[in-house]
Length: 496
Image (cartoon, rainbow, N blue to C red; front, side, top):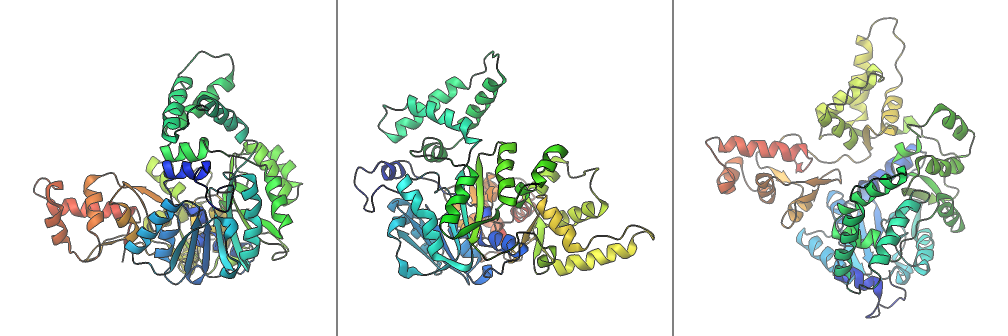
């Protein structure tokens, strides 16, 4: 956001976004269903994702909000951003997809009209740490004014202590580019310094090697990420306790992290776990940041007083649907799914979820599966935990996903294969598209990408074979198309 409500021609931050476009990405953690799921597990009664009202502050080019709107046609969405070019892009995409449930406004958040009313879910991703203090101090008050009584807000921000290391690198880059006025030229100069400093060198300090690895990680960033994250002016991390104090000033409270497994404290020693166990929930979160040297948070907030306890209640998972998580699928691809420490029930659950991917499984069906499994178990075995407890524990470990509104992904293409419409729109210009689980998918295979553009539901497999043209080689052209369709289905890009 710019320093003044009106965009002056010389506004530095606006100029930066106009000169180097911020390329948006879907953030699955900011999805209304993710917020609703966690809030429900903690005892809240949030609005159903299928019929809710959503606001995104600093929505950019719509890459995060539009796929959500396309998958939840019964809900309504508003996105605001101060960069006119980004809003124009979002409006073109929404119009191209014939979405009537979403509106984009080129607007400074300080000029956001009170008359717009309340929202069930508010998203502020990539905003809080990257705007001037005068704007940042307006973010949480705006959320508080417009959040529905049982609403949930998502706010991402850079955090200390982890960002102390990154800030050292940011300051090096900013010093090196201090006399470069053009934003694209700044990128060239910054990459030159990153390349120079990341070269291997003999060192007497372990920290030197750590910093060089950080620099090498920076070298892989896109121009968009480097310009608007690492070179951003401003870029102000905060401690978790400072963020919580800001929430409390505005009548809000910390609900949970959008990645619930990050609150579990996995990987810490028994001694540390014992020490953390004596703390209240907010103090424990701050010390977890110290333990993990955390640099980034994606926090959920609600109105103060909505909950008296912040305890996960497994029984509240009964109306939900479970699916394999991205972490579980990655482990499967690496051949590391089998964990000798897993309980047999957990192993069986993981196998079932992977077998059913990309479809999700209703909890009622899982309950029937689990009851059948228990009946077949050997007599005298320890009674199994309730299916809800097993599922929630696995969810908290990051190995499965829970949703109130299941994605419409299919495992097998139909007679007229159809792809998720936002993904087809995105594939016209890029290899990276958004799937039905609101995740990025790289469709770099030429045949898959060409087919994705054709999968509007009007073509049979035969027509797809005919139109795929030179992408097909050899005799089994139909087999090649089927292979590509199977890959797209596995990526959760196909709908019924």
